[in-house]
Amino acid sequence: MLTEIKKFSSESANQAADILKKGGIVAIPTETVYGLAANALDENAVKSIFAAKGRPQDNPLIVHISNFDMLKPLVTEIPKLARQLAERFWPGPLTMIFDKSDIVPVETSGGLSTVAVRMPANDAARDIIEKCGFPLAAPSANSSGKPSPTAARYVYEDMNGKIPLIIDGGTCRIGVESTVICFKDDKIRILRPGGVTAQMLGEYAEVEIDKAVETAPKSGEKVLSPGMKYKHYSPKANVYIVNAKGEDFALFCSKKMSENALFLSCGEREGFTDYGETSKIQAQRLFSLLRKADEMGAETVYVEMPSKEGIGLAVYNRLLRAAGFKVIEPHRD
Ligand code: TXA
Ligand code: MG
Image (cartoon, rainbow, N blue to C red; front, side, top):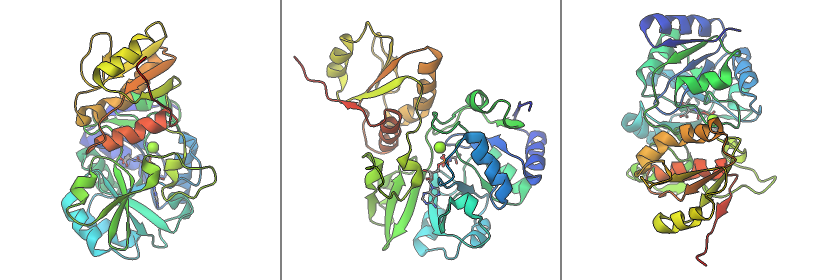
């Protein structure tokens, strides 16, 4: 199959909607990462997403809507808290989990009785959903296990020959996937951290951070967000988080300079690759730098410990998974 990349325009959006209406899949930009979209209510269309990504069947998809009215038929109930959060954070990088209605196929929900829904802030994404008139299931548009794509060319790397069309909306503004939350006893539980932070949500209710955000699941353990149990976001290179900052990190790396490695520092430092001084910039750059490691043929990536504040928790969460939870504790000799 020939894979076209087209800049977002009303013409390319019409072409995307035509493909989607026929049950096909199209990669679309969002403010977080690119998504691999198909009709969320068409089980066969959804199955082709799993095939293109090589994604495990039990990992549910997020359903994307373009206006609040689209939520009602997908769920059995909209809690008051969810309504308040939608008013404040939609459109935006917040995914909420609801009990699903019967129109959501089990293929979309990964066999669960719940459905994850978000309204993206990206105009191209919402325009395409609006033109379709049905919600779009859209996981990140990478091959399963690879870093999520933050630009159209990265989608092409993974999906060339597998999908007919990539809508190019430029580089993703946020760079890491949406915050995924569920509700429990009037509390908000963060299953996956993202651009809407614990602090922001804390203005509305008590917030708990699920233990899977920062720790590796034990084998066989049931996890609330199935995606969190898989190794993820990984380049071919071996990634290590180094639990050190500034001079301590530089000293650790100075002993590794002979290795074929990429060294990612928080801020500019001679001989290092800067992955950003602030958490916001780190989130924007992280996935493209992990892909760069492979482009360079690096065998190893050593990453300076990021701050876990705000969107920093999302950066740390993605890094932990890219590293397969390998954190080095360096000790000064
Ligand atoms: O920012 C995003 O959310 C991007 C863009 C494209 O919108 N999408 C995305 O989708 O990251 P995906 O499929 O790569 O990640 C979805 C995550 C997975 O960790 C999945 O397990 C979780 O959401 N999830 C989906 N439905 C769920 C449900 N019903 N219960 C618990 N977790 C769910
Ligand atoms: Mg993903």
